[in-house]
Length: 102
Image (cartoon, rainbow, N blue to C red; front, side, top):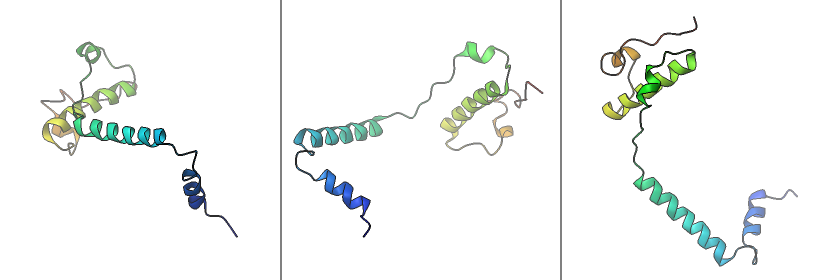
């Protein structure tokens, strides 16, 4: 008969000597810390430094990274992602991003 791996894990976890009071206190403390961090975390994202933005893009990943930061700014202010990049022209994008390599 095949053994059930879930029951094996439960059996292992319930062995006296493996589960100690200290272990369960550490588990409980980590859960409390995780809940505290989740509840108090602010959802603000810092934009990149201005001197990074001023440098000309040399590869596609730079263009994607800069555009993604602008999408994050749009998302934090408007509350939803843009339907297309044209919706971001003006306040968030000066012009539509182009591929600097091609």
